[in-house]
Image (cartoon, rainbow, N blue to C red; front, side):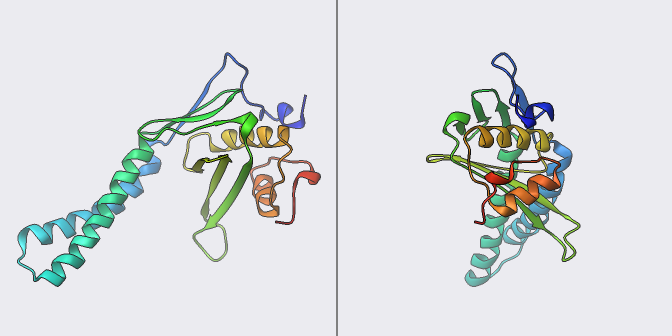
Length: 182
């Protein structure tokens, strides 16, 4: 039994599957931001006669906000499935990573304020060409990070000092020999 087993960090056994998803409440801000940019841009293009340069600029903003709205809807519709074998996304874009093939893990913290008291975390996992990025708005994010950390420990992956510090902030301890000075 590893130290992560005792902390509830080991992936579920073969018969158990853990599911994770982005709740609507967490995605509401992104939907509102997308709408705040898309609706006025589209309304101006539809109701006001503008010259070609202004139409290209406003159309560009509409396209950017439209793409952000689509990306938000796709993320909101994605479910993550974790088993003892690996992790995979279920939704429009499917990604699958076997824990046995995991070759990189990074947990980053992105601050929204100078005092670093507000922000979000993002987990990056990779195995060969397969990549998966998940952010802390995901329901059960810390539990998913525990699964990934247990798999990284099993694979004896070296984790950056920043990743080790971010794991520590979530209350997840890793052996010091696995943290590097990358």
